[in-house]
Image (tube, rainbow, N blue to C red; front, side, top):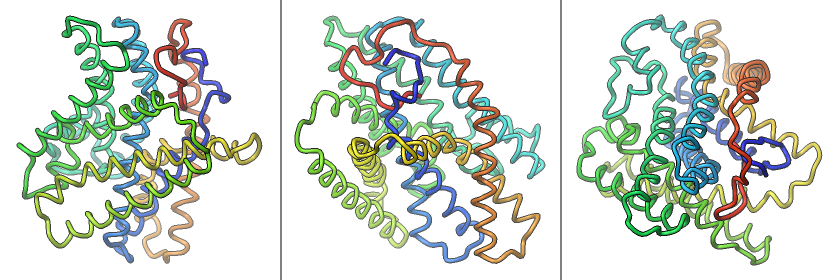
Length: 374
């Protein structure tokens, strides 16, 4: 696939499906958490796990572009990467932020501007009112785009001998993950794990690098064993890591020990990596047709669903506070999906088409095929 060409034939559609399912897995639990109707550890854990899947998936699908930046070793390619990411994420985010700020009357406040510049949770929770709570993960994503490729490039410049692209990327990613993990252990708060550590950029930016590391290893491994066996093995990993993550969350609810907190980001990354491997393996079973189109559609609306679902939730709660669970959640899901669909085709798609392209070099030259283009 030529760099910069987001052709549907070059997409891994099951990763689109995973992205869409993760968006719904964040959206639906938030309804029950907000209304306090049967919400408990399970609903919160599902939502948290889905965000972690987003992190790993982002690192994975952006892996080829970061490798291209490293291979060329110039700032022009890095600039193209950053502009593409910012055009993909920031305009839609600003629209969603404006929408939810209007609902809460926060336009122009200091909290609004901290959200706008992705600094509300840079070192701790800086905002006095967290009226757009899902933005914490979006800040982590944006700072990863800006910081991680520069670190990988700088790592190559600092080494006297050229370690090779793959080795340079692997060593830099491991160094990055270890450094952030040690910082989290050394400086993370023991009294407010969720707000002061789990949702803070400087303590969680490593979560996306796990996806990049997964991309590097899967491409280099060149797995040739039976596809069905690979699917079964990755499904077993999903079940195992999901159980570990839920057990960790359940134990944390009753015993917030430091050990469980330190294990949580690792368990979450393991679950995200196993989910990506499973859906990647399943791509071979998706034939062209309606199912493939549905997978692509789920990927298209995933980002606006994540951005706008809270605005729909809060808006419906004010407009129709007495709706029962069945009617309320039906309106919530249908309304969010409709807004996401209209927003993608009317707003996002033209911006994506206008993004700059990399010069004509195969994006996958250094180490292997490219997954879903972003």
